[in-house]
Structures are given as structure tokens and as C-alpha cells.
Image (spheres, rainbow, N blue to C red):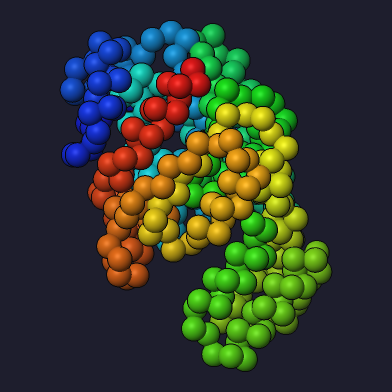
Length: 322
């Protein structure tokens, strides 16, 4: 067992501080983080030392790419999920998060990239959710997913009912639609853009493209195409619309990856969902400048605090449902 101390981020809302004090906590919170593993997945369970028995518990699912339990990877260092886990632990909740299959402590679950499929991520979430539910100290169960992880969370919630669903910067449209927009925003030379869109169209229909230009291999290497095809089959808004689970949609106004069109699609799928738009928040829920370079620089700054309104919004939703 590893014990660490966590502090409320500077500028955190009085709502979070008040919620924590109601639980008898002091402004300095001692947090216990215990290793967790099941079915080849490796993760961490985070809770305050004085966490009440039967307190709400939340499973946090990572976003796209080789992302670990903390929200970090080869190209990013955000500490987003660790910060959320510690913040919610300070408010009296338990949080389980894990390395995605193929990453960190869960790396042994993927031997060949070409064998990976989207629904394997859903299987992993369902397994972790069952593990959390089986604990005798878990109260109401909540499921939260970030970015691609929100689509995983939607499907996992369809398999096993939860008390609440939180979608953080969740896409509301098919992946091929979003990728098409992203390619068109990259100012690629016209021939390269046409090539990218033609490959995407084939892959989205389950086809394979072996002749991929070097400049596009990061996105479309043959070994990743089966996974992309499996995710392109997901329509998040339509699948969310088939659920009756209380839902919170969180979106940053300076998100450069998931647009307001995605938020609007999710809202059409679930008109009864709670919606919170965080002014100035980027895709990793840090307060970002309007300038594009400064926004993306926060993807590599784990010291940057969470947007000050993120944790209060989560606490308010969990408290209302629990």
C-alpha cells in the first residue's frame, strides 16, 4: 500500500472544500492509494484515509492512445486522471483507475496491435466495474470516461447498470467523422489530405489499406487499421440515447479535439443529461490560453492544475445521484 498526501488545487471552489469538511476532513487530506489488479489489468484504488464505508465509488476510464492510469503516455504528460482521483478522494469518494490494456502494468494483455479491438476496452471496463461493485465498502457506483473512454463508458453502462455516468470531453459522432474534420484542420497539402481521407473511408468500412504514405503511417499503419474500423462502428450519441442512466456531460470551451458539435450530438441523444461547459478548459481539462500552441503545451505539463470548476461539477453530480 502506498500512502500519499493530496492538496486541493489553488482556486478550488468552496463547494468541494465544504463537501470535504462535511466528512470531517481537514484542509490537508491524507490519501491512500492501493494497488489493484484483475484479469491482467493493473490499476490503483484511491481514497481518503477517513473515507466513509459505503461511500460512492467511481471507475475512471482513460482516453485514446497508449494512456496510463494517470493520464500520461509517450506523447503526453497531464496527470489528469491522478488529479481527478485525488480530488474526489479528498471529497470522500473512492476512485479506481487502471492502465489501458497494452500499457504499463496492463501491457501483457496486448501481444500484437493488429489483434486489438474497441470492445476489448469495454470488456476491461466491465471487469473493473464488477471488481469495484464486489467490494464490501463500495456504495453507489459511478462510471466516468474521458475522450475515447467516454464511448467505452457508454457501452459498459449498457452492460451493467450504474448510478451515474460522466462523459468528460466525450465524442458524440462516429470516429471517422471526427478524424475527417481533424485532418482538414491540419493544413495538409491537398494531395496528402485527399489520400488521408480516402484511406479513412476504406478503413471506416472495415477495409484494409496496405500502401500508406510515410507521413500518414502514425495514423493509419496497417496494424492499427482493424482497431480504427472497430471504433468507427460506434455511434456514441445513438448508444447514449438507449440508456436511462443519469448522465453528466462535461465539455471545455477551448477543447481543440472534441468540438461543440459532439456535445450537441450527445445532448440530442440524451436531452435530459446534465450539461456543464467549463469556460477556458481544454481537452485535458486544464485552463488554457486561446492560442493553439499554448493550449497543446498543457498536454505536456503534469504540474498544471485541473480547471477550478471541474471537481466541483463532479462532486455536485455524484452527491445529487448518491
